[in-house]
Each structure stands twice: as structure tokens, then as C-alpha cells.
Length: 71
Length: 374
Image (tube, rainbow over all chains, first blue to last red):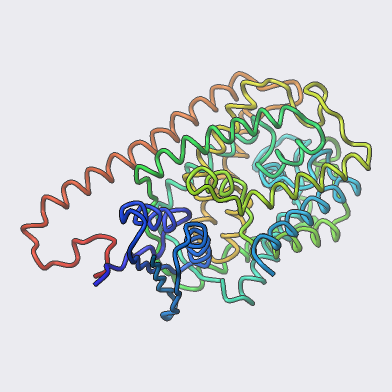
């Protein structure tokens, strides 16, 4: 099961940097799950996914968003 | 409407409003400047006694009102904080020194550039250098930690303070200082300044406009989104300045600026370095504070104290240049921000190493996995 990274409560650009590091670590292919709770983090990660051509799904979980990136 | 179009439209409107505010009375190349305007507010409250920079700037109040209202309506209003609060205060304090030595925040820097002030270009180089330095620490794991959701009452305090400032501005009691001369005495009509602030607050809340974020994202992710907004501000303000006859290309004799290149560079380098660690420029901090981020509200108080301190002790630059104490303050600021960045990364690495050693003894204890949930 893919580990869920918890980026809740982190200021810009830490959540997106966390995902970027994970993308680099996976060598361009795989699945990343990250939990965020700010719109800025959600949008930044969405933009990064789009730029790196990873597909993305966002599920709202109460006050948080669970973002899944895959390629 | 896609994000790129929204941020370009936002930038264009900010640029146009900045030109309009100057036309209607704001100081030259200072349609909007978060650092200068926060400094003017400290003067109005008597926290510094320089009688040329005292006014409760309605633009700041409008920004907060606009961003607060929009965040409540759009349900972006979330009350949280508690991540390295005092460190943020200290960073805000020194960031203001840098910006008052340069004479402007990143937003005014763009506006100065659009009027042909080449000193602002030197400032931009400094800002890029400062942000680049900060990203080195971000890559190495610099973090101010995770903020937590707080009681909702905390989030209303910053907008409430702003509301009190608005009442003081409208009532103008005797204990509030309003400059009779100098930049502080120059301002557009109150309602127009307030309205412009509200419009910018709404737009900046929706698009998260931030120049520090723009440069940072370009360096870290090759991402241009935020920079489109600032290019739009520059282009629209440039056209506006040319049409108004306010475009004068050069280094010498620029309005409310000095041409000491070294200190323009180092001042903005300090501003950029501190702001990238804080996660955003003063504009972004103001908007985030309005959205319920109490850490950003503390950062604003750091900026305010920095401004009061800078003017009380003669550290801020003037049109003639940067006083020696101001130069010393910038060097101290760079050392302090550098030390904060270095020790943050150092202790992070140390903590990670020691928690890795403990893992075999905590088999099955999920609480030791730090940021991972499962």
C-alpha cells in the first residue's frame, strides 16, 4: 500500500516540495499519496502534477484533501 | 477561467490601480507598497516619531477586508497557526529592515522598475539572490513545522485589529499622527484607497499572488504561474507611467529612492532570504493573516515592530542613501536569518538521525514515523 505523506499544516512550498522530492525519488513512475489542508498546497501540487504530466485525483476528506498522483 | 488568465488579469488590475492611486495623490512609484504602508501605520500609532511617514494607509485595511470577506465566502477561511511563531516574528522584524533600506517591498520594486528606476533592478537582483539562498535551505529540509487548527476566535483577531484601525482612521482622534509633510502626507482620497485595497485583497486572495513565491517556484519547480502576475503588473504600470509622463529611465534622482547599489542589493537580498523562509512576501503574509493564518498575523507584527524600530533608531534609508546604522542592521539581519536557516536544517537533520537510530527499539510504534501516516 502506498504510504500517505502528511503535508497538513505545512507552509508553502513544503507540501509541493515534498511531492517533488517523492517524484524524483520514484524516478518518474509510480504512485504518490499526500494529505493537505490548504487550498494553496492543493493548487501548487495540482500545477506540479500537470507540469510533470502525472495524473491526479483529489478526494475531499472533511477539512483535508487526499491527493493521489500517478504515472 | 484558467489560473494563468486569472493571475494575469489580477496583475493588470493591480498595476492599473497603483498608477491610479499615484495619480490621485499617493507618493511617486508608491501606488501600493506593503512595507512602506505598514511603516506609515506604525507612525500614525506613534510607534515611531518620524513626522513624514505617519498615516493609517487605507490600502492595507482594504486588502485585509477584501481578503477576509472573500476567504469567508469561498470557505478558504481556516484558523490555524502555531508553527515556529516566534521565529516568524524575528524573521518579519529583520525582513522589514532590508525592505526599508531598499525602500520598498517586492510589489513597490516592480512599480519602481515600471517607472524606469534602475535602482529597483539592482533590488530585483538582490531579491533573486536572497530567494535563491533561501531555496538552498528549503531543499536541505528547512521547515517552520506543521501548524495546527486553532480555535476560530483566533482567526478573527487580525481582521478585528484592522477594523479598529479603520475606526481610528475615520474618527482621526488627536492621539493618531497624520503627516503634514513628506510621503506620509501624500495620499489618494480615503474611499478610493480603501476601495483599491479591497479589490486587490479579493484578487490576491483568489490567486495567491506573491512575488517571492514566483521567484521561488521558478527556481524549485521551473513554474512560471506566479511570475505572470508580476509581469502583468510591470507591463500595465509601465504603459501607465509612460502615458502619465512618469517614466524616467535612470539611477539618479528617482522618487523616494537612493542610488547606493550595494545596499539596494543587500537590502532586498535580506528581504528575499527572510521572506522565502517565511513562505511569502509581505503582501502574501497580509492576505494569509486575513484568511485565518495566525502565524502570518504574527509575521505582520514582526514587520510592524521592525518598521517602528528602523525609524526610531535611524536605520531606514532616505533619498540621500543608507545611514551607517542601517547598513549594520542589514548585515546583522543577514547573519540572523542565515543562522535561523542553518540551525533549523542542522537540528532537523540531527533529529532525523536520532529518530532513525531509535526505530529498532520502537518496533510497531507508529508515533515515531514523523510525517508519514501509514
